[in-house]
Amino acid sequence: MSPDTEARLGSLERRIARLTAACAVLAAGLAIAVAWHFVPRPALDASRFMLRDSVGTWRGALMLREDGSPVLRLNDERSRARLYGVVTPDGRPRLRLLDSTGVTRTVLELEPSGEPSVRLTGADGRSRVHAGIDSTGSGWAEVRGTGGVRSVHSAAGAPAPANKENRPPRR
Image (cartoon, rainbow, N blue to C red; front, side, top):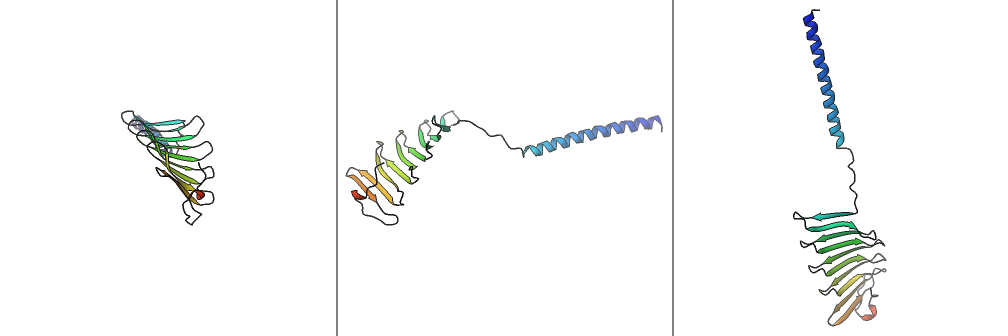
């Protein structure tokens, strides 16, 4: 072989080695890019997440109270609570809806026995309607107004006349 041919052959071998190395690097990069999509993302752990609008106003939060109860709070544009949800330390969920003055107007919750109840209040915060289902499956309601209190308590599946004797226990 002539020296010129040997030089050209050596040059080609070096170019092939460089191209092989470049292909290996590109293949490794591609493998990493594909594998990256299958790697589990780390969890974001915190005891409080704050939600702020574009001007920095506090609009909501997911947080833990001092007793460890989880809370979801959604605020209006003045950072006043309008919806407040909590799971109490004994495990009962409770959802409160508040008016623009901060008065709780509706409470939806599960009683300690697990039965649901709902309470509607007036602008003064006093209970006007309280209704639910008791442990026997009977529905009950208590309505307060200027004329006094009217209570209804019916057996499961059957209506009962409204009178004070059928009144559910006060809560």
